[in-house]
Image (cartoon, rainbow, N blue to C red; front, side):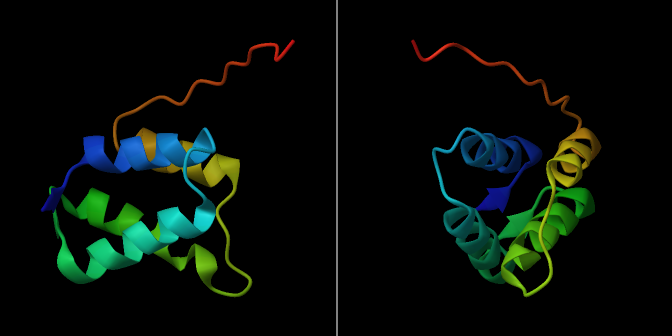
Length: 84
């Protein structure tokens, strides 16, 4: 399966909205680094970087994820709703 920027950005959206865990996101990235093909070098670099989040002393901040999405051509917007 070819990993496109749309597929990757959807995975990041799922993670940011707590629909998948950090470990699930990392596993998805690691699996695709081994078995996937990529729409572009930018997508491949982003998947590789996210896949490193399980390494000791390496994590991605909100700002890092914001910049990754920007490089993919997306603008991250934050919104919230009351749970009451």
